[in-house]
Length: 483
Image 1 (cartoon, rainbow, N blue to C red):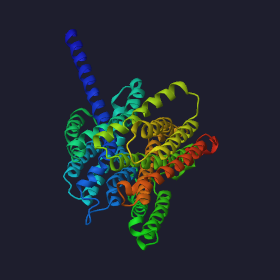
Image 2: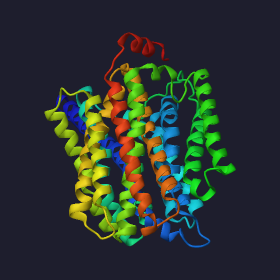
Image 3: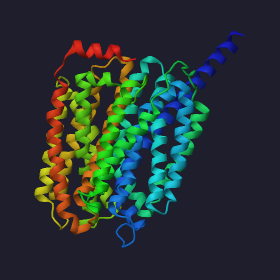
Image 4: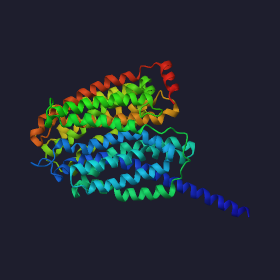
């Protein structure tokens, strides 16, 4: 009888261990898939444009195509925090499964889109799915593991973005060699497997009925503000800076930003709690994250476009060419953590921003119309990868350093939101400078973009230093009043 009881206990433990491994696979896999999407679409950007008629007399412009990237980033940024809070109210498993299913379905729709407009619409839905599954995946992962294993699991979850950055360019290049449609189709078989794991292995936690419904209206207003800003910038060359449409878009962005600020002060569960911004390190980390990623987004895309349009690289060759930079990000981050443990996040971010800026200056000084990868492009891009490895992890760490433990998840989501907004503005600035020019006609615009990116990185370095100046009493008072 005792042997039977012991066997049952062992069997139960084995099943529990197996279930935990499946939960880890589902949550880490979902986080990796959503992060990978950004990098594979960047590499496929030019091929998508050719496939959808960008540049033809009656076709869409390059500025129109930029919304394939911008619409995703705007939607993800606006919904990330509210969807995380909705998961607390209605159940993490429910939100995770729904977000994953929407992401997979929207990926299929993206693959079969035959116009820029349709592709942008389905990219919005894809981003909504990513915003639903990303924060909940971490919550589910934490709940499935014993306390002693949670730190390692969180590190593994966090490193998925770096791994996606490392593998994304090459994967995107390989897929685009077949067809740009496969950049989206690849999500279907992976997503279906993850969905099966989520439905069968993830155990839901009882929803918290007392959680205040998040400010979804505020999220829509926020998305509208960022979207109008991006619209005004990207279409400025087509419409003219003094046209009523450009001025109206930029004025509308400012007006909606004011509405969003007022809404955030009144709502019980705003997208960005005003009191969080009173915490100095958090405020400066968000400003630095925003500025740094304005530069990084423009720097990444202009490099890809230069390789493909001026040097006539294929998507696969481009993916292999830019893979070196992303690979250096996790390597640099690990070495920094090991050998510079006592250097403050503020200083590491400043160092990384300056290194990235130097990479841009090198590219401007050496890039020409004739391909010269080893001496012209590679050194500048290596500096960029090292700089990002210094800056990006420490922006997140510095942003949440002075927050209360129960505010760290929300704080991380808001810092991530700032990163996405930076991507939108950076890409918009690129197309504001370059306009609809392509190839050699865009060369001067590409050079100007690298200069603007270098300037933004120096600003990010200065802003980041503000993270290190602390006012503990006021910060702690701000944290205490947050609901």
